[in-house]
Length: 514
Image (cartoon, rainbow, N blue to C red; front, side, top):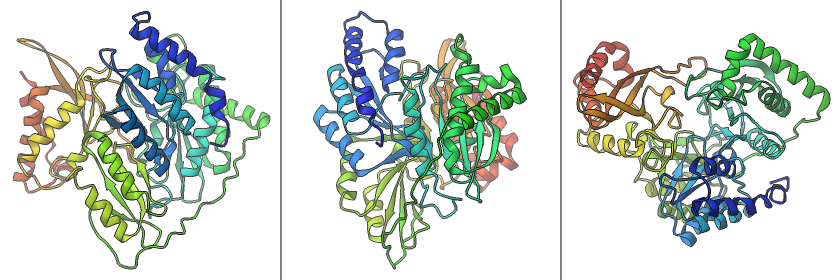
């Protein structure tokens, strides 16, 4: 880190240790501790006995050094569960209170400050995972995401936010980071500038962002971030947490009013601040292989002869043993690093053909097809606010579908959130599910509401509305039946749903009518 945030934040750890012990001694309520600990990137898990620590890593860059730290600490503290998130971070789960406090300090000293990893703070800055190596990208946005992440750390102790602020960067219209509907998003253009979107977000009452500026030079991005910070703390709702996200400023100010307010703050920042960035261009000089290699999980990079290998552990659950195996594998490989995706997977980038083959072989335990790359939040078995057990549901669905041996693409990637917070991004999925409760003749039962037809692509964004609910016990059978219908029509979901939506609706009715 360029700035000495360790010195700035390290004194806070004493208060964290004190309040964590108070919580475990029954001297602090669950709600009070959650409100406090979130600012340190940590939450007590359901039941209050174990803890989670969320590590910040701007742009999802899991370097060898960071991976080594995680591996060694898993061994030291007996950590048995790692969870990749849709915000390109890693959560370490099932921590004892004493271990949590020690681990947090060690992570900070290793350069992974968890401060602001939760709570009402700027969160982990996101970036397109293949930024810098993707053939179709407009330009490499990773350096700007990292600079933004560093800059936003300045506000953690200096400013009180109404709630969290999510900032992200997209290198192409694929819009993997949802830059056009986050609190603040920078979308790359072909002319090497950014368009800036503000006040979007998923969750309760989701909203697409508003384009607030076009053709912004990359060196000017910090002005736009500071303007968003100032707009949020000036007009954000500090009284009602349910309306304290930036997207609700579209309601209170109106879109034109919000744009005017943001522009006013931006003008002030340009007058008062000197925030130009001067980032040196990093070029990958590693020599690639002359022999080509091909596989559906291998992506040729724009650097000739180099490749990225995609790996999706089911449900985003990276076992400590697998993390250790990956570290031992890539440690001697020049320039190879891991990029976490916003959909709980990873790319291992900058591999030559021989290295790509070795990585491919070592990661054959992951998702076998598109459906198995599905996204699911940690769910109610761990999360205090979760309603539905997302991970259990995903496992049940994959187990049921595997027995049918459907062709790849017959079923789409699905997105599962355990509650309305949309940590599983269910609102942007072709097919998404959100945890809840459904009343039945025999009483309330666990169910998941259906969200259908979402799309994150820039210029084609659709935030799906909530439909009817399917009981958890019936959801695997629903997906199996859907797969059989599509197979009978000799099709794949993407093409089939456009031509036969009425069949989908009829099937859905069968599973939601009782």
